[in-house]
Length: 228
Image (tube, rainbow, N blue to C red; front, side, top):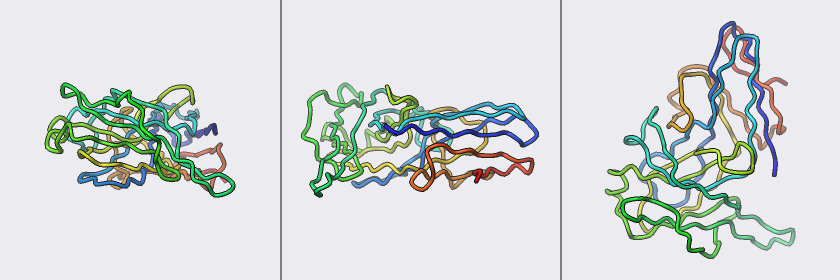
């Protein structure tokens, strides 16, 4: 499993709190609301020091609830997380389906079923199937969420990367995008964050074209940039 490392060098002239989050995945299946990114990690860093964000390429499926209707700054509480394998293709072109999980709701608690399903996710995706044991109104009112999780170590789950409110009787194909964002601010791990509403410095880190070890400099003009 690929390991990634982002080193942030604080040359801004003051202590900073750096915030790392993922670009929202591509989701196939009906989603009425927004597909939210979630804060994956934060790091308080004194002037002249550096912080390191290390994580693996292992993804997970998450089921969660939020402490209010989804909006920037609202905290997300993960209740279940399962490692997943993305769909792929063999050298001869034969498709290898990715992991498929089933979401159930028991006594008002959304959770993943322990009954295995036949894997049927598309290439580069995993699948979450929802049943008819809840309504969309119930999911909105109770702040049910499903989505994508990441791993800091590759040996266990590290929290949500992106979440959304599910609808009943939908087969969601969730395709992660290996792009992260780094910004500065007073955010907490797990809370909703919208990159389009960030007014300060922000930089995109696209691991589809970058090496797995990246250095970012926060300069004295408060700009974040990837070191060449």
